[in-house]
Image (tube, rainbow, N blue to C red; front, side, top):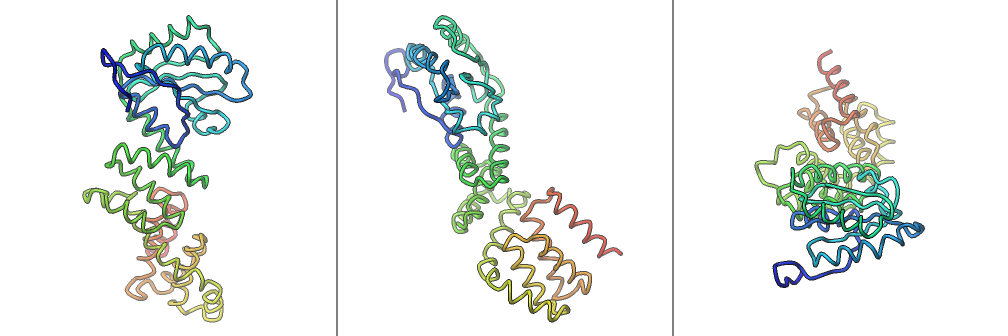
Length: 305
């Protein structure tokens, strides 16, 4: 926290370096208290070197009324794309969680000061909700691309700011599951309000945790189970375990095929265990996933043919 001086203004402070992982806390949340200017720059950018002393001096002159956050373009490409930054330097002003003004290029001191004056005069708006939704989408995309670290950083920032945000909590739990930290995922799941337990994201995390726990037992048996089923195609118990092992090793298509094979042969086998497991897999992947929608159509075709 900044030390307050006469008149309630915060003491002057230097610029801070910000990344996608702490953007939520350092920019979105901080901009609820005062305007934050985000300066996108790059080491190879000559105009950036011209702008730096001008904007740092102008921000310092506000005596803490405005904060300056600097983002290295080359190290934060996804963040730059999300904010539609196409060249450097680009400066974006955030007020109450949303961008309210921006400029590109190295402006002279007078224009930079005029820009800051406009930002200080800017009123609020819809708040941070739209920006949070945008960052949730960025985290989801990062996770889908296998960038667990970036996704976890964004989800964590949102969850720290709002522990009732189910999307952030389940996203963070999913990151832990993908990293093999099942206990941490369970701890996060435990703080989600009970009235949210039927949310699709929560159900997906619960299913993923259950499947991950099974994976520890089944993954090492994949080769043996494959041979057993090849030798005994009607051994539903072995095929059921094979499906679990396949899903544990990310071969979800093979897992679904084997479960559907059991259902087609005997839908009531083991009190409908194959169908129950299939639905659990669907929950862990996500109800709206194209793979799940296609598999559901295959299941319906078998059950109602």
